[in-house]
Picture 1 (spheres, rainbow, N blue to C red):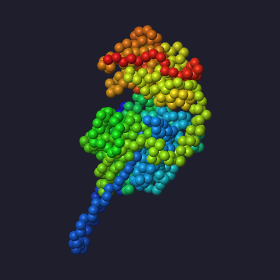
Picture 2: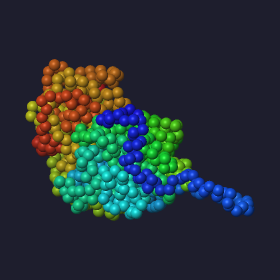
Picture 3: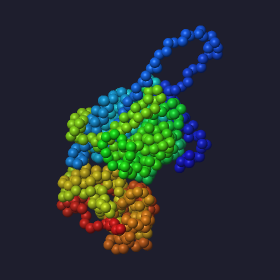
Picture 4: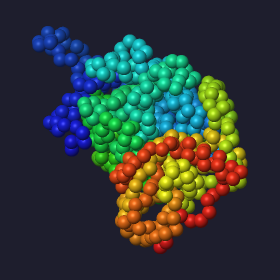
Length: 618
């Protein structure tokens, strides 16, 4: 295995030795009795001393025990969406409706159901969650836990181990094999850095708290990551796996975060952490767990792809799918892996993809923001502990049908309390929008909302000639009608600092070319104070046909004052040119700039800015 960045080279056996030392005894205790262990040897001479035994009458062999019919309910990319949204004019999602659906499904197999999340449970959240440091969202997921799920620091039940390494003692109560919940980290869990993540999960009041719970107790479920390690020590930041028992059969769950997380998280968010190759990290722990005769493996992977949605059980042929990123990982996973729950793409996936042994692996993803979930049904062989059958269906969480008609009362009370707590802030009307402004770009890549946001940033920073925003910085559309502070927060929920810098025209051209970084789809920047034309047919590196600043052709030798958010300023999303900007200054935050700009508009009237800034030609 190649040496991971930031780690000292080790002998080939060292990763397995380190892994075993980190959580010594956890696999043994959580996994329960080993299956297939040889019988104890008889004492010497015992056979000779034994009296002859008459032959037993021939009887028909006992029929094999029926398989355990296990169920795994999966969600991904919830992003703190506590309140319902709409789709095709119908209410969908929201915390209370989602919990109602999941509880109804779990009630069908109460002793054989697990509920898992594949990352980005929090981050880029609406105000009811984000302004309360996403504590209400963690509390919502806690509601899905059974009586065996415990917070960090709560005494585990008898027989649940504590880790051999003192650093890992605080996570021990999470690893109860009979708790029905598990999650992995996405990139957004790290938006505010490691310390805030560990506080949110482990408990303790935020400096701006307490909020709804005093003191904040943290998560009642394990968050897992096998491929995020502390750079200095090489030790996992969180438990890499947990082993659940489903009617006596062991099921290992391994968590993985996309390796490219540092490119989509601010440097401060991932400081001191190293992200290992997903497949290599998973396979390392699988080898350890197979020694315990564990044969059923579920991977929670915050990386995914897109596939045309369809109803009903898994189809053999994915058809028209864009699954290259997840295929790259699944195709290198150990043959023992049975299910991969994916995320990050906010899309639909329900397909069989081959692992490194060409065994078909069930791969699922259930949209995002609580608008769907996947129901994964597994048949587990009671004797071998292996998965002998797997299938899934991705369901939508409609608020006007089925369990959505009776939202969960505890979840509804939690959402109501969070909403009431932030209402005085988010309900202030700051403007009026005669028409809706979309965050998604048009065919050329230009977004009406992106034009508004970059105009606001350029106006906010004295001397700025150009403002540039990243495509992932716009998190919601702006609806027509009264526009509240909360609506603007939903557009820009990160509270990114604004950074002004000097760039030459040549650097700006290189920056524009970085929108096509060899990926299948471009990452189109939004701009103010400049415009550019690009060619669909040109090769990457030569896509930009022309560019102008302030109505004049961009001068490669001239210096321009540019404002971007702190994420972009650090080279985020692969826009590395911006990390080299000179004469840098930090001047306020993106949301503050947007609110200030809207309040200063004539009549506070928000309309799409005129003219074209991005043009595509063939």
